[in-house]
Image (tube, rainbow, N blue to C red; front, side):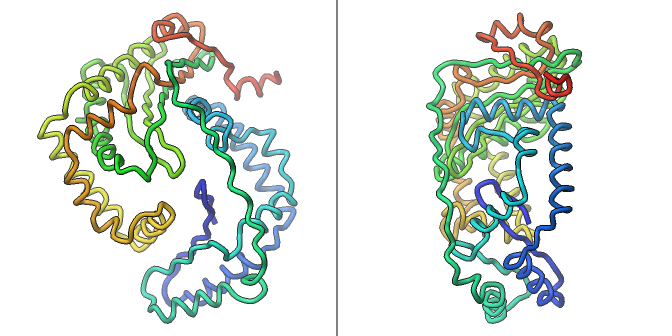
Length: 363
């Protein structure tokens, strides 16, 4: 069972000859979960300890702080804390399960060596009796009062004393999966960040020697999307690395990509989609994604065609519209004493404490 962010799912994968037993077990999980207290306590302790360890990771902290800047005090911008995890009770879990796991508005997908008739029979076996007829008590969707698009650059410096490297992440709001701009955006991603020969890697890594890795990509979601950039570099090179990435973004905003870049990106993006639909599990994931995103039934059949129709001007327009360095929200996790002055050239710097070290120090 896994949480897909804005949906939950139960995934069962098994050999065809074991399908009946798999369905029986899945039915028990769905309809008669027992939630043992000892297992809950164990998993809760593991989750808290894991999160404490993650909060010592500069990359994790940069991710969390960037989400906060982009999405504010909404479910998309908030992150778990050790305290919030510790406050969860077994009854909270049971209440959540009762609200969320029910057949109303559920999508049941059977993929593989199964006939339509058997698939329908299995569906009736999974969803039957009192559970199928119970009132769902669907929880209200959370209100996503997203912050307005930023009008100026923000620089947040998370103080990580003694660290030899700076973890850098930046972002700005962009389109959602409902926008056809995603086709141009996927090609922009490939040209900017698709391997060692991409624009960012050629300039930031090969030419400038500022970082081992760097990327900038559009990341559309169902209710919000963003363009995000990320890299890591020696502490004294953080401002230079950010400026170098900005240079790459600006060139994409100011001029069309070349014919060679465009043709290569189209081949790789279309081919990548085909490669991501080779297994039964991958095909099921794509079908579910299409349903949840409201895509037409032939969306993936026509995906390569839609990609092939993207023009250089559409890529430039998407970059111009969304990827403006002047309003980029930037997070740098690095020692403040060595970083603050140079980062000040990019804008006003707000210094915050490293959460993992703050907790360890008992402050």
